Length: 373
Image 1 (tube, rainbow, N blue to C red):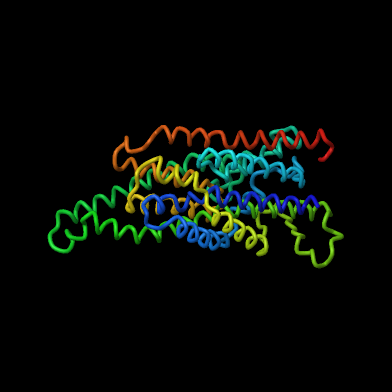
Image 2: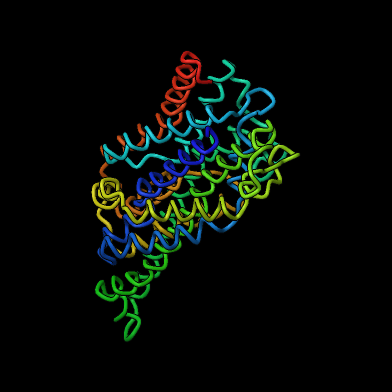
């Protein structure tokens, strides 16, 4: 029953992740009025579904690269507390319309619950950098370093893409005939309105490829722990699909298709529900966007996220698209960005891991005090 409770809680987290982070892939395309909110949400849900089924490198990182199972026993209670910490923070930031990271909420909850279960920081794998950008494990290389480098790269890439586009358009403006004609604002908006549909779809795919895999990793971690503990030895044959073994600590774990498909569908359902509070923050409150800006921001962010997914790095789609939008806005002028909104977002980013870790830690201690763990 505890194992089933973990799976259900993980899927609740996945659903909330879907509607909380919907803004990541559709805020710009809605703000520029290229698609209606309903059209954008449906497109994002479909692309999230496809992206979630693309690879499992991030899932393996979450399942094996953060917690030292030789120190902390990853029980169902620990995982439930970790997930509840992430769920609580996601709901708080959603209510306030702050685009915080569901990825870091989950990582913070997992680390806080693991530390609380043994009262030792050694439960966390801090760093094992054999090849830190691919095979390296630990919170340092897989979470902390990307937490700073990926948004910075998204900001710079968004700025560079806009710079290239402005340069090309300025050259076209100097031309005569057809080339000069298509560089007029009306045609530029029409061209990038079409292009932005592609970039927004790619962003939705990238979101699914990274975020959905984190919950896959949690469910796989719970099944491996239950299988190793013998909890599933006596389950009926029709439930044998729950058994999941991993002799190497999960590094070469094969994520079963039923886990991937279930997480993908649940995230798509959550995405379809929409997260309008955060969409308003990213798409309207931070900077005024046109189709060309939306295209540049989505292209920059999707590039960074897909690269991270292929390397098994659980980056924040929220941080990446937000930073890319800032970079695009700064290409217009520095004061085009509403920095008071950015300041609120940054506080949410900084507090996510410690806040979710503290919540999960407190929940584990409460379970111990009540004799439930």
